[in-house]
Image (cartoon, rainbow, N blue to C red; front, side, top):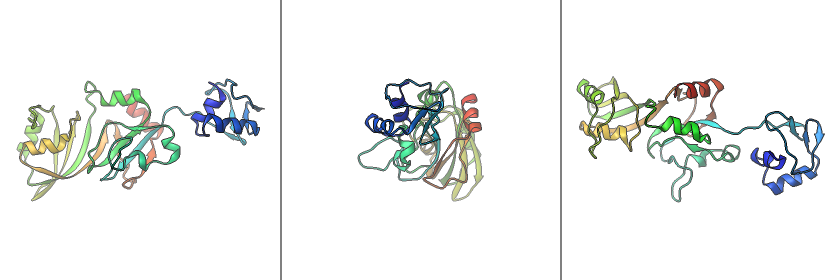
Length: 237
């Protein structure tokens, strides 16, 4: 990889900006000052520094976000704020995208990355990646609802859902539940409850595969995945 491309990819500006940086003698490769933008480097083997600070090559980023309500799961939108708008310049530089979608009014776990291969693996219907949601339901949720969800319910478009697992946390005029599904149809959790005559009034995603929402993350906050989280996600997807 050319040094100008390496530095541009690592957030040091455009190719033009990088040429200026190189001319300032601020860049060294293995202890040697480099001024030639065409100089090829081994991004994984060479020691590259800018103003004495080592620059580690990063190809992919993996972010966990606690998505707030009112923000859409998209990279750009003409009218609404997107999850990408919540990121800092350093993260936006890598052009991440949300893995799957959460409805505009739904909160909780959202993975953002620029790793298309991992995203495809997690979203592939063949992989049956489990996703768990916490919800508050207008009405009393019954054991019969749980039986129906395990068998698969018919949605408003005639689609029969795959086996899902319902846990009733609290029952009453407004019930609290956790629901685990292995697919991601449009508004699926809400439509599943509509199929049994009930309405979801609050929805939050808690997990996706092995990845659990960090309870320390406030709404709208995000952090990089730990090595352990990333390795588990790749192994157990």
